[in-house]
Image (cartoon, rainbow, N blue to C red; front, side, top):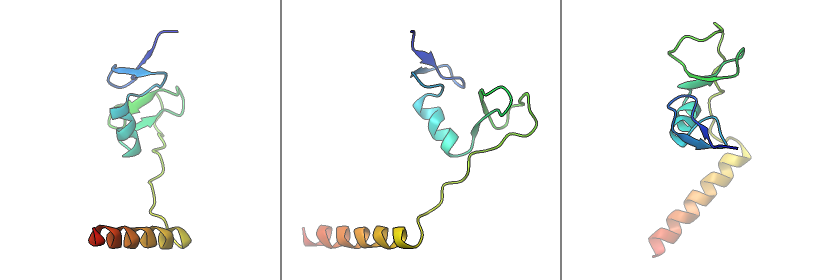
Length: 83
């Protein structure tokens, strides 16, 4: 099976429909997948469906996860300062 090309910029994308650069743009909400035709498109381009659902925004950890992140960051600061 030949390698795929990115549906947005036509760069080589291995086995994926998006290349690495366009995958990052997808995470930022600038590229979305059409609900009707299942193709990836830039958000500013017209699509075959009016309602395009952008990916949910990434949220920062909260509660216990935030506490763990804070402790790790504090420990790394102590290690770096000790060096």
